Length: 218
Image (tube, rainbow, N blue to C red; front, top):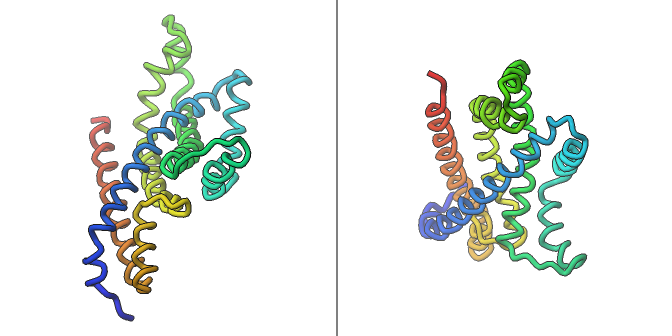
């Protein structure tokens, strides 16, 4: 087994450039997923069918279909069906964000349901509306409880971002594939790509651990 370290080191700036793109699309996809997940998660706990049923259908569809298929629907399907052309960056971020939103919605739902029901009843008895009680009483407590699974979702999203290489988005894996196809040293380059991913996920896990400590109850 021969690993060409010189090849990895020589092309490291190119891999880092791809890693920066990976970080950017992961960041914006997570923001989109968090926004969708918050509202869909609250909708999943609602007693109003108009909110609960569409939220449930969204979660079931996204979680029941592969992320790669969702990427292809947005990038290849929309132009052919509706003449809507998305560049690879927009399609990648949308697909990752919409996919992550379904999983974050379940995290939010479980966090809300973990809070004692008596707290929202007490808030309502003080004159708060359901929305105000959710905003000031339930969600702040639920947020502390869902931080660990949210951290896991960030790491999963970071690794899943490699799938957007299939639509020629120049992220980390795509750049690694370009070098490997030019040098024919697939083992060394993909090992280098894996190492950079390992650094990214380690950094993300450290950031999440810091946030968890920051918001921990003394």
